[in-house]
Image 1: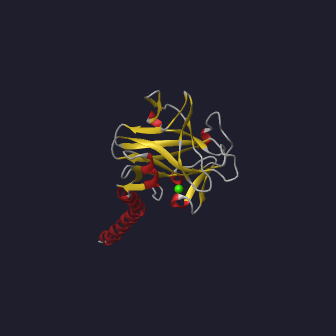
Image 2: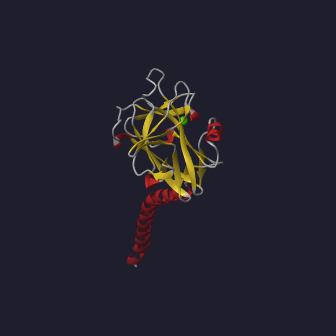
Image 3: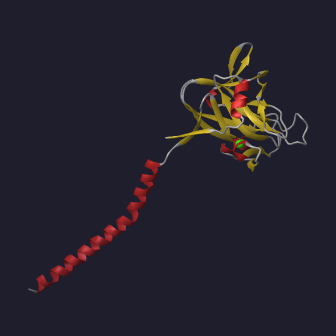
Length: 232
Ligand SMILES: [Ca+2]
């Protein structure tokens, strides 16, 4: 008979023992569930084109090396980026290579321009350029009446002081040429733009890629606009 008296105690012990295990499990599981839930619900947002314009705020680049964000009421979105490293006129120092991803909703050819600024006190041909490259070689120049796809970094340049100024064109080294730049996206999807520091104290506010409108229209329509973000 005494054996039976112990039985409820054993059962209870087992119960609490199991409960403890359950509790231990529960202390881990909710975290995992929360993480999974966050992944499911997290929106993925990307810079994209709208009404013929693909505007990329410079402060949205993934910065590294000698680039920094500066706040300024004159800049689009209140910010621009400055390259404060040494001049790199001959080749790229990839420690100062910055990257941004964006997407286009359809295939298309986009003229590449920007709003930039030089410090007021520098000579007119200083602090006014970068190295530029579109991976997958979708960037192009126009040489001898033909499309020339750019397979490596080239110099991109313009001038402007006091206010951020619309402009930008290729001043190529290999082959030597000058040209407007066109990004030719073969299909809808995500693409990347890389910029590398070239001249010290260059200031970049935003890039303006335009398609199906004139350069003047792109300038007028982009001046007061910031980038378009699409989330899905
Ligand atoms: Ca900006």
